[in-house]
Length: 276
Image 1 (cartoon, rainbow, N blue to C red):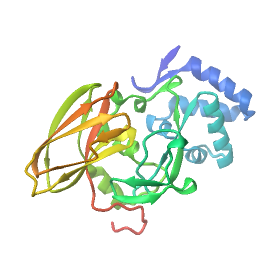
Image 2 (spheres, rainbow, N blue to C red):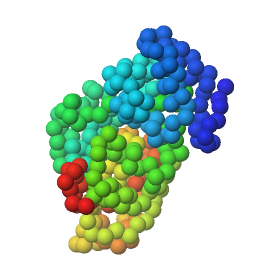
Image 3 (cartoon, rainbow, N blue to C red):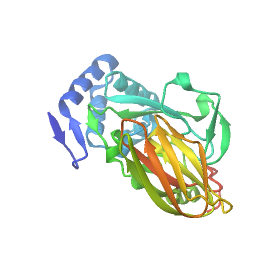
């Protein structure tokens, strides 16, 4: 039985959730009250709290120990309530700079297109592990590109929420996304934007993939073409002149993709002493 909660977008499968909470109790040995509290969290928390959730934030929320929360989330993943995901973060802006995939694809270096810096990948320092509710238990808007509003959701898709950002950085981020579009599977879509000289990115936030678009006053072309592949945007760099730019995007995948045009800032930082 599927019960609708809070809004048409918040759907919980009570049958699946109840059976998996029972499985969680059996495999974990955790206190029944703790598991019941966790079940209420899965039923009622906003979508944002169930996408790339942190066990440490959950521990603070409900007043339990960090180790207990980590055990709870790992056992909940084993029981099929949560799904485990990870990503490499830029040490400067906290953006995800790796495409989703297994640890086998982890490299020793990663490049952030926003900051234009290369960084070492250190498991303990800039690899984030997070948990998202399983769609068979509860449907949230982040499970499907068709239910994402990029203007509202792109910050959560692109950046980690585990890092503390200064007001200076947050103000920059709010102004970065200048255009967005839904591109159907195996389709070509184009949009136009008035671009000024500088650097832009064509971004697929749900895939952590992007390509550079340089607006150069010495360049006369005003139309660019990008191909969307699984986890990649190609070519990696294009150049156009300032003014009305037509961006033509060919989605060569079998799924809908959400594409954003991002005006790359000159600098972003997590430094708490950054200027206001």
